Image (tube, rainbow, N blue to C red; front, side, top):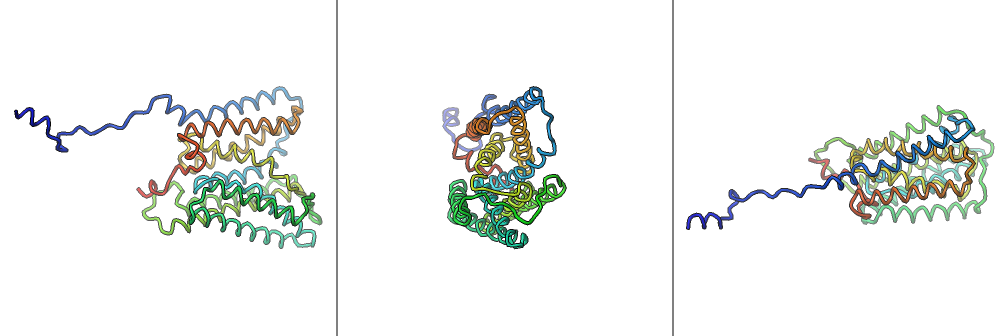
Length: 334
């Protein structure tokens, strides 16, 4: 009887602690390593394309194109790890570049830079407030903001090509672009620190919604810097300028969400910049191979589709992948 009674004793001392289910090796591979395979294949494809191309690689041209996409990559990775990706960054870049070019025609490029910065701050404040205080999906809100920005550019400039008049464009001075890129990087790290997404343990987290709003506030400043670099280097902008960038933005976003090994936000930031450089080199090599812009865009779209699928598989679903913050505040407080 005593043995029978002991068997029925459900006291905590006699209970065996439940072990969490172990993940299979296949699940760990999908979550941690599958996302790197498309990147490695893209790198091998670039090397193969360089071997097929008879034209020399122009590193100066690659760098000049990279500064723009690299700055955008900083903002995309940072916003993704705050609350969700800011897909309005390409449109914000175009709006900032257009405002700088338009104001420069009246003889004051400084006034254009200030006006563009104020507009960026306005959109950043609105986006951040809606995302943080109303809990709206970041991807949806920023896509709506991007549509409003394109409408504003079309209304102000009638959708025509806007040229930077009266100011010599800079195509070879890489040091200035590098300096602006470093500023964008510092602003991005500051946004991670303010929103408690920087990989340093914190004891308290006051005013989380205001911090998130200010984080998106800083991200739009990064987009404004990209607009300045674009208009200074290219010398003109159109309404369709951001169409090609949008695919690259999706690639960068999906790449940093495709592996849980990128949980550290600083590592993810470095990886996103690397992917931006990879995309820049890939575009340059495809042009050297004689591919038309249509096929270049098609290749990038296919690449983006692959990475989005991998990101959804790695994060366990599209909801987590498209709005993921891999280092939530609760974990940083421990």
